[in-house]
Image (cartoon, rainbow, N blue to C red; front, top):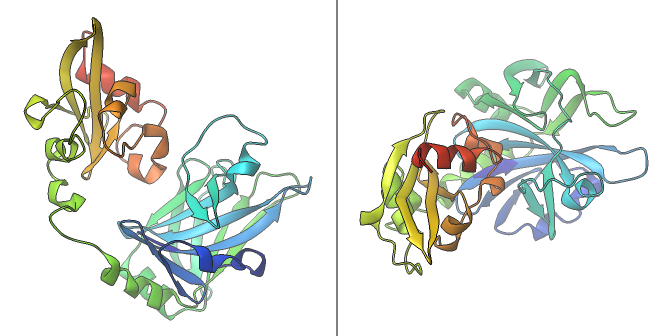
Length: 298
């Protein structure tokens, strides 16, 4: 996956410490394991002197353009108790979505004064649009990309209506993504069309001896993706429900028993909005909906 970040001087001081990232002027390519191309802009500090918001402009692994408003996890936890997924790691710090930053306003992206893309708000902290060939060429040849809306930033005293990202280095960063894509017999792409195989891959050596032959599937009734489950079993006289949600070859363990048998388990709240898009699910409701779908009579 690749991310493009138009860095300001205050933020750019620590750029070299990004793990597995290649630097191309204002843009970066990071592969872990997929590749993203990104740039970031610092836009506003809270009135009480806290940390600034940062706005991330990214070309994701599916070639969508995503804009994310971020706060450091430390700053976020000063005000909220909810534990959101990490959107970005830099210099040993984690950044999470600032979900009220964009409000409900649509926005446009212009390159050198010409509008090339419309983006829609997803949850107040993210905006996304389809990256067309025209937009891509404009990014490759342009100097600056400007995000414009009716007003960003929900913090007091912040009514910013545009955010400018440098495009210096974008073309080289975007071209580098192909050379960083890993393929091979162990890659997730091999099982991307087979949700049972995707789950079986992360069950190796589990303590209950669960194997691929035990797995069953049910189509996600809310959107794309598949629930993979094991018919209800009793362990130590207690009912145990094992259920995963799989999208594009990525299994997510939906509850405690499932996490306990899943190698390197991904959890619902650890998956960003891009993963949940089109599923009708999110990190908060996926477990309950998965259990209801797989175990109708529980």
